Amino acid sequence: MAPKILVVDDSKMVTDIVKMRLEMYGYTVNLAHSGEDALTIVASDVPDLMVLDVQMPGMDGYEVCRRLREDPKFDDLLIIMLTSSDDKSAAYEAGVDEYLNKDIDLLNLPNRVKQLLEL
Image (tube, rainbow, N blue to C red; front, side, top):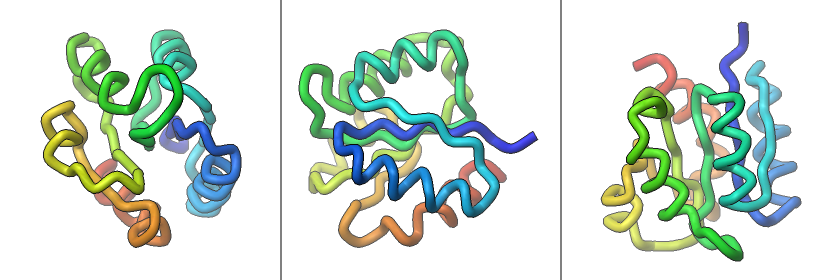
């Protein structure tokens, strides 16, 4: 069974690009366009990995990550923060497993997903 990935970004263009890239590698990809939607989806169907943006209206990616890390049932959920923000320390403090820059690392995303899932 293909690993399930949830991509969370308020930009439909970004989610569509990331979904297309990851599906090319055989992953099952679901989308959320807000932090609130992401938490709702995860509560009912926990993915293997989440690709999460920081800057979103309402609840930002840091808060989504903190809330997930506070709940032990999500201990195995891997989180990659894919963002144009430069605040790596805040991302790791929130509990991400990996930090990637949208402008630089987007093409490398499938490789990082594969590496994290194989750990």
